[in-house]
Length: 472
Image (cartoon, rainbow, N blue to C red; front, side, top):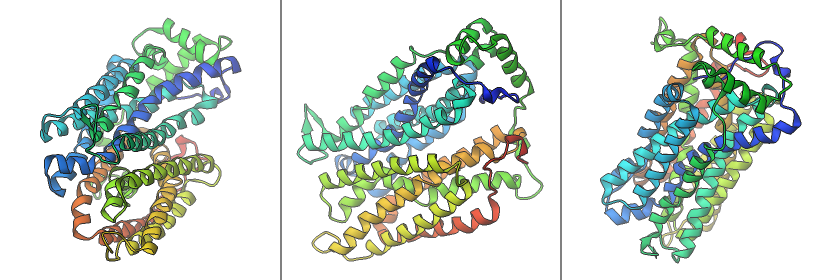
């Protein structure tokens, strides 16, 4: 499933001002999937220690329960495109909404640890679907002149979803007198944290009834008249609708549906450019960014910060994530992708090294010494800032631009799969590594941040200002 290709000159087309508000509403509604992507990914942060205590499990088992959602993510992402091509983008959104809702209810009311893990897989499947459907739908309904800015709604929605999940967790903890297992209305606080996602999940489903199907999908199933109506809504009635339909049809006929076989090279299995894409995806995760979103409350509590304060710091980290993402959106087309990636790697390496130093101190009365504690908190925020303003956005821009047309779809799929696998590896290993040596764990992440610098310098080519047809 790909976005509509544009013929020369079509980029000049833009929605008339009176239509732009409608297009923004459509885009924002579709981006609710991104919001849920971020929310569901990060909300577990508030429940980690309560789940450990409730079921009396060790770090290894706990890590698997947290990380198992990523298996669902990988499956959902791998299958969403085909599902959407068969039944349409809107129906796919509704399926994701139902899965998010079921996952929220099941996770809030588990019978045992095994079914909590099952509900997390269901939620992960919905996340995977949302990660594919949202960007594709937005690209297909956005007028060419606004496509870049409207496309950024998805990433913005993800980071806002992460922040809101931490704010909700913090609020629920306040109601439970600072106890993750404190009771509110007959349920423990952590159950409310996981269950509140029902609200945005239902809203996502309701909004799907207020937005139109993708014109591209409608044309693919022969519903050209309905496609024209929607094109008129988003691009204006003054546009030659017959010509637009013909343009989309021509683009669809020209597209090469890449397969896994197209990615194979004579050496090392894949073509060199595919390995570069895999490297970018893997480095993005191996610096440990998701530790900040899945385990930060646990991390701060482990070095003596009380639960309420740990939730507050998790929320402020999410706000920094939003700020960094906005900075990246502003700079990525001005300074280029490669300079941002290099700056981000440098900043992350320094911040992670500072965290490793801070966590090397012996605890005094269960807490880090004051200086080490301050350094740890500041460095954690600096790390997230540098990640967000660089690798958090730049990797996805690179992956969308760096591959030749004939292999782009398949190569993107392989790179995205590598990213989910690396995400799983970091998420599943952190609790056990932290039990072994927290400082040593951050030294490992620091090494990956440092190694990403020569990788970018040697293997990654700048894509700023180049047409997709120039990639080879």
